Image (tube, rainbow, N blue to C red; front, side):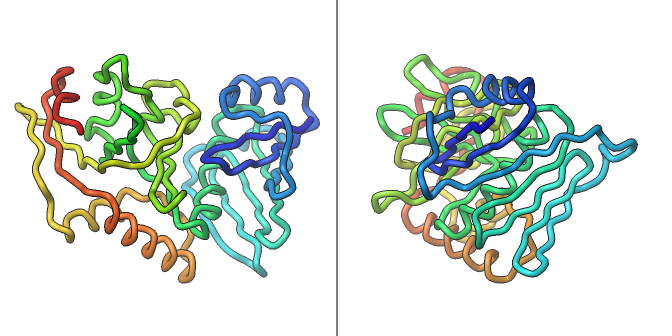
Length: 262
């Protein structure tokens, strides 16, 4: 059975022979499914296997061999051939491993499209997207929970950012954090990036270009030790910072924080 999952406007055909697992994927990616795959769609063949004993704690390892990318972690294996735009995954019948494999795959794809995945919550208000970046505990889920009704949440964990129509846009993703729910499948141009810090009061402060660059690069998700792709991601980060203002947002966990986001 084929399912076409389109995240960030990038369609990936997921192919599985297991009907029950296909139903799991349909539920998890319901808002991101499209009825058919365009000719340019990428493809992942899913092979299900029992979980390996003691493998859960293995760290992610990414390598490249003869043009093929291979990603290995305790719960999944991903093999990807960029020349044919096809690959395969091997993991147990759970939705979390394919989620992780898709994140890794999209980092490869975005690197050549001028975009990146960012460890950040993101949301749309009045047709503009706002990114809220920080490491675990910085307040990404908190600020998402505090959003007023006129805010559309794109994600509370992993933001999808790429250029489109001469600007950087943020796209909704199914990659959920503590909220445990997918973001809305919508997109908007990025108005600002806020670097989060929880504190006793709410205030917005400017940051220097060097501070903005360090924070952005620290929070971009990229796993491959490949000189060419690293260079492309670095260039994308620099171009993003030329177009998008960056601020430090210290905030107390009250709904009033959204009064300063603009």
